[in-house]
Length: 188
Image (cartoon, one colour):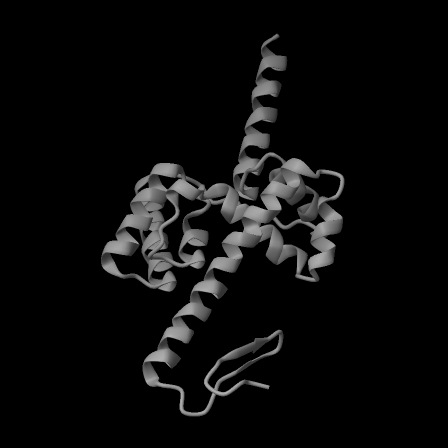
């Protein structure tokens, strides 16, 4: 139970004392938000450290957190793709997740724009997609759509993760490599 005048945290609750001042209530809310928003970064960095230092124990450590494997994998992916020196204090983890698949320079550009314009994560996503559609329509490119069984997609995703690439980038590089090898074989 909460002591008189002191906020008490439990794993499943926050007990606030009666008569809590408005300013204190707001301060607590800001602290809780910072902890919640920071935890994704902390877990991502923790996972990267574990992968580097404890390769044989990493999966067990992940299992012991009782958190969803895919969620943890996403945290680690964003933390790996957006290094500490590129992270912006004024933007949330989800802003960074939106730019994680972009090249370093593009990440900086979009994060700066989001910070300067005060964009929400959804607005940042909308702006990036609009720019990508504009770029795609300017470039003459073809859209190729494939349907694959989930187990095949899982294998491809694991290979892409191992290469530290986005799935689409891994697919393109793999196909380019095969096409180049075939061209060399035909020429030789």
